[in-house]
Amino acid sequence: MIDRRTLLSEGLGMAVTMGGLASVTTAGAATAAARQDWRRVELRIRFMTTRDGRTFERGREVASYDFHDDGQVTYHVSSHSDDPRIARDAIYTLGPDWRPREAFVRLQVDGRYEGSGWFRFEPGQVTSETFNAARGRRSEVTRLDVPARSFVAHPVSTDVMLAAAYERGGPRRQKLPGCYTSSADPYGRVGPSLAPSEVWLEYLGQETLPTPAGAMTADRYELFTAAAATESLETLWTLPGTSLFLRAQARGVYSTVYELVDFRAT
Image (cartoon, rainbow, N blue to C red; front, side, top):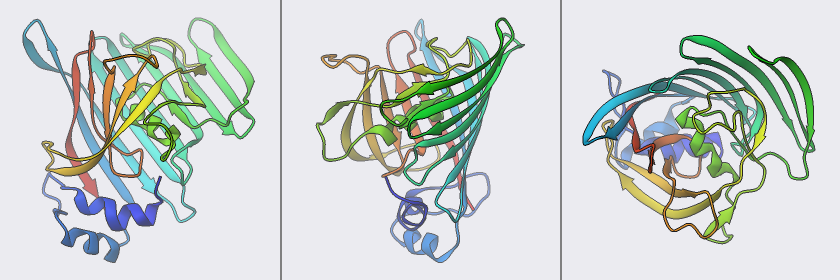
């Protein structure tokens, strides 16, 4: 994983902004990014689902990343799915390694409040304060054998945060240690509460990724739910060396492409 200054001097040079903002493209952009004090990235994502031979927009997400002088990253997201009908809001504090330090998650299902939760990640434990409309309030301390490396709260831009648990230089396909989610439900419709996540990730290298926001260089990962699985559940693309979302494609019953439609850096 790379830190903010490397991200800003190298990674943002591959991005293209839309919506009337100044464009950052090709090789000269790296110099432009390094010359300016970039501190914030904003994304817009749309969910394009194919079902019964028809492709339609099933949801949308707005996310932002604020980069601080101490190397930490503040991540905000507002995510809305039309089918199933879910609204999720989350705020994370991430370390310079893009691993979770703190998170707040709020969930609405079918237009009704489902719950909210605060999670504090420390080397040997996770402290959580959660409230669910059905079960009420819970205060918990979960002891950890391995420090938490990723936390997926079900907005799609948190899926790519699994990349922070991947060890470069290790096996190509790895069972990721220290991975957690805010809901064991595949769509994240219950909770929130801390749940372990057993997944395998395979790194396929870098590729040029065409997106509606322009062509970008991306790290590509394949996500598996079993060590011997032959087909991945989801393909994930991130800005190189980071857990910053660029694209995702879910297969099987999900059959959805989560595509970037806007990328802004300031």
